[in-house]
Amino acid sequence: MSVFAYPSETIREAEVPLLEAGVPLMARAARALANSAAAMLKADYGQVTGTRVSVLAGPGNNAGDALFAAATLGRRGAAVTIITLLDRTHGEGLTAARRAGAQVIAFTSSETEADAEAARADALRELSRAHLVLDGILGTGGRRGLPDHISSLIADWAPHRTGRLIAVDIPSDLDPNHTGAEKRLHADRTVTFGGLKTELIDPRVDEFTGTIDVIDIGLGLDPRSAAAELLDRDDLVSEFPRPDEAGHKYSRGVTGVLAGSEDYPGAGVLTTTSAVNTGAGMVRYLGSPLVAEYVLGLHPEVVSASGRIDAVVLGPGDSETEFVDNVAEALTGNRTPVVVDAGGLDMIARAESMAGTWLADRPLIITPHAAELARLLSRLLGEIITAGRIGANPMWWAQRAAELTGAIVLLKGHHTVIAAPDGHLVLPAPGPGSLATAGSGDVLAGILGTLAAITAAHSRYDSDDRMHPPREWARLAGLAVLLHNEAGRRAVTASGFADALAEVVGELIHGTDAVGSASSGPGSRSRYC
Image (tube, rainbow, N blue to C red):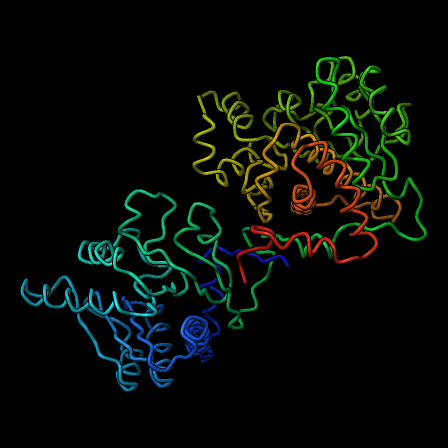
């Protein structure tokens, strides 16, 4: 199910009134950390007793969490070594660890040269033979960059590391820039407290964080203050919009598709097929008569006559201008949601430039890949933005594009990023590599168009005249990506994905668990527990 990510400052602020009231937050965190560490040791060695545990201890509260957890492990029979790395550490935690039998090695920059060399050798020996190491050096308040004596110790230990590493709350010196990565810690697991921190959700830090366990210590965080929401297949299973028994085709939503052209008729077929198979009440094809012949030959239920539309998909396959103009005229003055992909992205401008045009004052979702977003941003910003720059920081660039255009930006990639204009992110679990094929984006556009049409129709027939806020549309886009992922696990071509949607959607609507069994492969679930 979905997990919300919060700025570290929001989590720290939520802790303050509880700490002032005497709530033992550190004790809760340390207990959970000890349990996680014990479970890892038991999984690897069958027991805690007789294992070796080392703690890299810095000056802050995450060192306190690690030290109290180490004390618990020591009482359970582990041989614990504390390596203090700076001039101070958490005093009460260190005392507790010592009372549980831990030995202490002080390896700080203030040692004399001879003492430092001896301490360094001792620290390397303990780290190299440890079955488990707890990283409690720096937390969310720490500056980037470790002192030289610590970074060199880490670099020298790395080739000899045989045990596992748990980062406490957040890996020390976490940085998405991989320069100097050999001098930073690479955790097998991060145990974070209170809520998922936004620093941990950047795909570029995956190799430093490992699997992330989010421990609830009773902060009562408000999801409305979250910076991001992470979705997995369980969200798709629980929230896919199923038909109402009392509904009809119009209450199910009418998807308008303007895709394909005489040069690229396949895009029209793929987009329309996916719109149909996602479960629209009706699909109207709005483009070239030549493409309509292909579409109707495969899907006789598709309608090519004009009429009501609840959402429109346009852009795949570079539809001819006359048909785009027809759609623009039909949508002028209403708030019908629009999904814009591929060639249609050339119509997107800054939000203030689109004001008063047919694209304004409506839910607008754009679905570029990195190269398309680079071209769009280069035009909007008046400078050269490359796909490489987009790929180096996709979350930031998606947010920037959403801010500039006022649209929901769905930046396609292995780690798809969805940004709302207020900066809120939705991050669906990644899909299979098979999705990286020609026409895959057309299939996603059709899925998104139908989900938008269903949402708009529900609002009309449920007498809900409210405008869905941008965050809801961003979440809907996330569900579309998850559905696309499921189809990608059952085929290897775009036409196969579009056809597989009928099977996947049938399972979702009729409540079978086949979607779950088909989604058990790598990447199907969130790495956040």
